[in-house]
Image 1 (tube, helix red, strand yellow):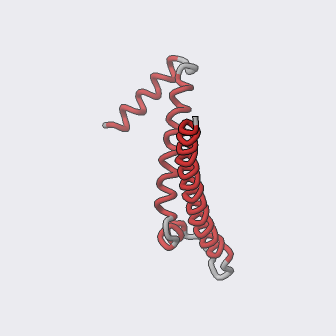
Image 2 (cartoon, one colour):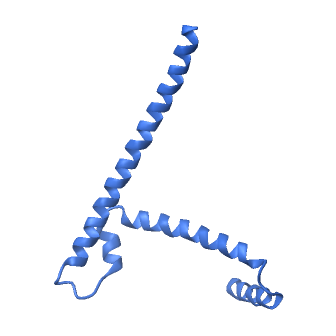
Image 3 (tube, rainbow, N blue to C red):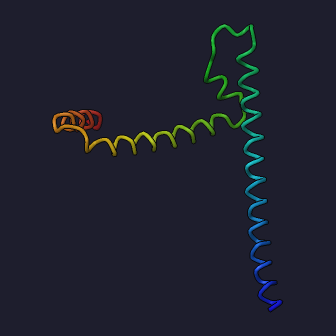
Length: 107
């Protein structure tokens, strides 16, 4: 019986290591996001800035452009899903109009 107990402890140790690794990754991600947010807020709070330049913020804030691209891609997938789910509720005329718009974009 002691062997069974040792085996179950090994499994839980592996889970603990995995949990700690995920926890550290989350902390690292939170740290990166905090630095990016601080950089953006510092830029926005600069009273000498008369016009906000989003491209400047994305270029000068390390990691922000990559994060923004990933965020937009995730959001795109959500939009696509919402559209697919709502298509069955549309009347035939609307569907035909949408199809025409898609054809015009492809041409």
